[in-house]
Length: 362
Ligand code: HEM
Image 1 (cartoon, protein in one colour):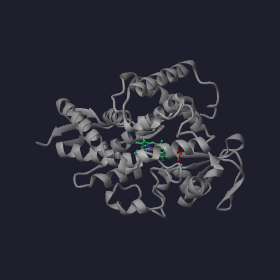
Image 2: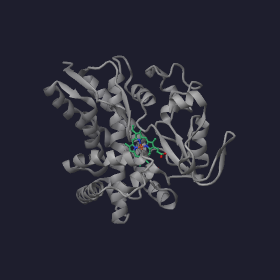
Image 3: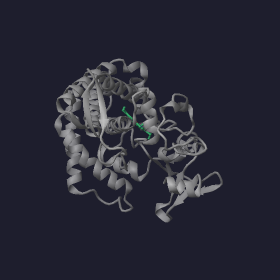
Image 4: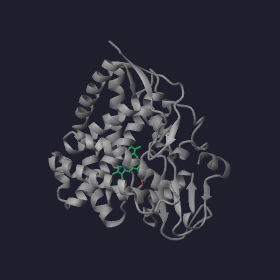
């Protein structure tokens, strides 16, 4: 996508006919489809369709009245002021992880971050530890979700094994919701049972792999004197966990003189925006000193923008820098490979993990 952007500019049409899509490369375009004209760009897309098979309708897939109702219901619990208990949860889980690391010596930080963010998310959202079943089911579910989101033929009936895994994961989440005890759950209990389950599953899906990858990349790239919050932001600039956001044009539109026909798709790619040469100098270089000022760079959208912007942005930006701070207080990390290759999957992840040697600081 970056190569297309470099070669053809800020609007690139991909494909034709039923699969016409447009890669939009300028922050003005992101603003247009995600904020100003968001009612005209909906989520009847392949990516939302694939997620819908797993979560049913949820904040991740919905538009319109139900989305608005649920978003307004949940929003107050994800504002910075409402996240007071998160720090203690992050501290406890991170210290326990480090105790285990120091006993082991060699770890794959990417896998460790997946486990850590999962523990933190379930304790913060539901007040309990999720059962192992969820960790077992999730990778297979995400694998097929991604295949369907990206396949030209992805609209067919889901396989039986996938449907069975989805049914099982819904049952697991129903058990979590029944057992759980948290302000968020109390708040959400006013929803019908199926809507509550769908939103709980969507939160687990949205809140875990994203933050895990932001952290894995940060540990792969950070140097001794980098400030943790700035390093997390810069890692998300180079490797935005959500590397693409998809919408469908409801009606004919025009963007910067280019026709966008009704029913075609538009892609806003944070990965491409974060390397836009008009907005970033030497974009491939990891340099946390770009932040905090670059937080106001219009071409920085790791959490999206507009009404569907990430519900968990404050949550992630409390969690991730704190994990980095605690880890660096207690241990030195030597990443074994000089260069970690990305893999564009549901999230943008390190292709072969992040193998590292951990040594205690004192
Ligand atoms: C570093 C971590 C994270 C990144 C990079 C990230 C990124 C994003 C992005 C780009 C969107 C916009 C998608 C779109 O416009 O279609 C989004 C939406 C969303 N995120 Fe996050 N996210 C992160 C963490 C979280 C966490 C911790 C939660 C848990 C609360 C969460 C929950 C959501 C939800 C529910 C939405 C849908 C919001 C809506 O449509 O109203 N995310 N996220």
